[in-house]
Image: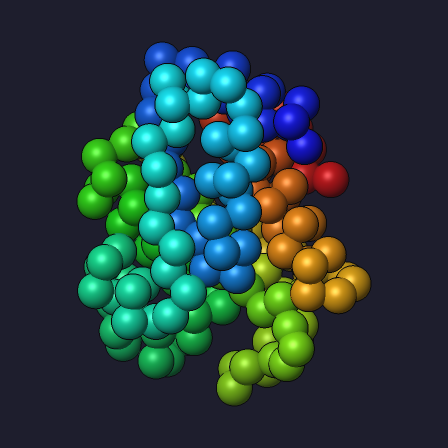
Length: 160
């Protein structure tokens, strides 16, 4: 994980990065800040575990949360965009999903995770379905978010 975080931080050198994390509960921020000197790139993040925080802090539209659910592509994108704007950063990554024990009212099953990305030119998301227990889903989501940063910002073509 340290190697992956170091690659992300090196790729974003000279830029600022923020996170908006729901199901990972700060795992991306914790992984990044384990790297010495990470504060040159990583500004911080918002742990937005509830819809209230997504709406009131990040500016995710309440109607979007009610009609599509927190675990959706459009919410992941709105979270990334909101974090980037509210925290005044060059790049943002967001994670929203279901680590368990149950699914949601929108028929998303455990392991469904959407990762959002926003920079000055792009806002997008990708859907993942991870397997394993709660901790394994969260760990896979953290790694996928870090890889998405490399793919989107640094041009590395992989989501493994």
